[in-house]
Image (cartoon, rainbow, N blue to C red; front, side):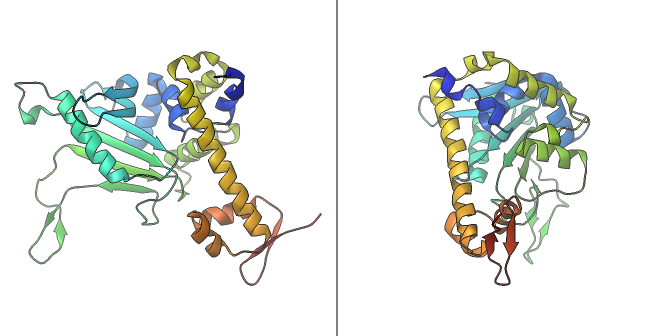
Length: 281
């Protein structure tokens, strides 16, 4: 690969990129910031493994973006996903099973399985509830069909799905972190997660991060970046042709809110029919 081709790629990457986030959060202190803000106090990260490879000779292997281990030996699995091209819920199911098989040794009791945390950060609200954060709990269905959590049926699996499509908007520490993950710029930096910012800056300045990845991975990253830019160009072109956000959403599989956000970035006039037209200078 011509290394000059993607030499400025880290400057363009946001933390939602799995390639970039693996490098940034391989720093234990940066990962500690991430875990603390999402899961709360009480978790001390003692080790981080990016590209955690669980090989399986007979069945499908998995490579996890980041696996952090706490001082209580609780694995925390973090994934960053730009594209919505798979069943994320079933992916977590498979990853969880693979990790359990990997962690539980022969002769150990099932009760020795540690609690495990899956944090999935995505660009789109693939669950579709119009919320930023979804935390999944096991519950029991009563005879009348109602779900109840009064019975102890927790199995130690914690699933948290966070999307960047729906802003949290409460000015909290997590709100600022999610903005920074989506758009990793100096404008979105916040003093409350200094180690993440420090790791981002270090990775952008130091070219040695390339040793972690193959040329194919950099090619794929560049291709994904190009697809996003290309899709945005199509959206902006359709807006300039006075197409409504609802129509563009159906054509591009992007949310109406996202399309309106793009429209706000250009000098456009909103028409009575909800269409847009680029204002001529």
